[in-house]
Image (cartoon, rainbow, N blue to C red; front, top):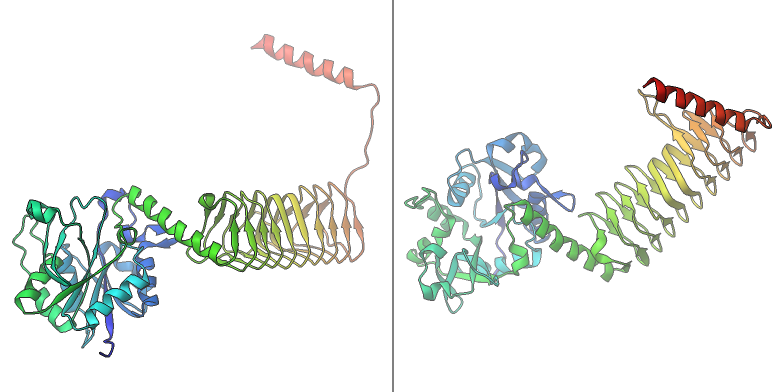
Length: 450
């Protein structure tokens, strides 16, 4: 059978009151990406390029961020069946199959989506996704005969025999688009909550002589996010996926459990990462890189054979080229550290270029902000910046130039020049004891007065 086009309806209008947050539930983040974006990304990898996102009214001003996907607003939250009805009434779906997924179920994998679609494409009118939790509890049960789903029974309405069934309903389903439209329009809300339940379409399908089959997904894929605890659990599962993929791709994680990755972290091969390292969004790491742990990166690039850390922070716009060294307690922001350059100790480099093979001494600061503007510092190739140098931007230190320790550099330093700004040292011999006695007398005087 030829593959039918599939359009996904992503239900993302839940209020998430148990999250205790002003942020819409589906906009909370896992690995730096909103829950609903994880769902959309999974659909794309599974080959479902077109989606309709059903949002709550509080998200109406965010419609543009979902482009090119269509969005509709479910003003009255009257259940999952009603949400699908709202989507279909506002959209033209033609002959496509319709896949219904949830914006707060971000761990559903593309492989499981493909398996569910394949079940439907074998000729059944509908296919639902089941799973087998260790404690079925309050989940609705899929009552089956062979490969067919006869009905879905909510736990509260189930008999003891039905409660013994381990196959539970995830809520995810795919169906013949034209038939689903008819079934959704026929849904009733004669239940305690007065809502239209999407699960009721299975009974309507049976009445319509439409076969309903099922596929099974892993329990971890089908965690719905309703609380902060759920969010933390899902983060742990997702991090383990990312860690496993990184190690399979040639990354050594000294302590995987303390290494945190982002949804878009990109690694080369033969990389070693020490413990307690956090990769925020937008980080790319080249081949043969060593990261010594206790580091934090975001929107940064680390080139081949670079060495970073421990206790280093690379902020937005940091770029380390081949063989660059960034050491302990160093912060880099919007700066390029060129090939072979070293910034090894207790230093802040912001809005700057550190040239090829330059060396920046401990305690150096690029004073890039004057309270109004950010200005650039340029350090030339082979330059040597003495310890505790303050480079007051905008300023340039030429190729091969040297700054003396403790210098405050306010003017450009020519190539191969030495810049020294410290005042002459004066030694007042024999005065230390007198100074201490004076300070002690002043302190005692203040104590008596108080």
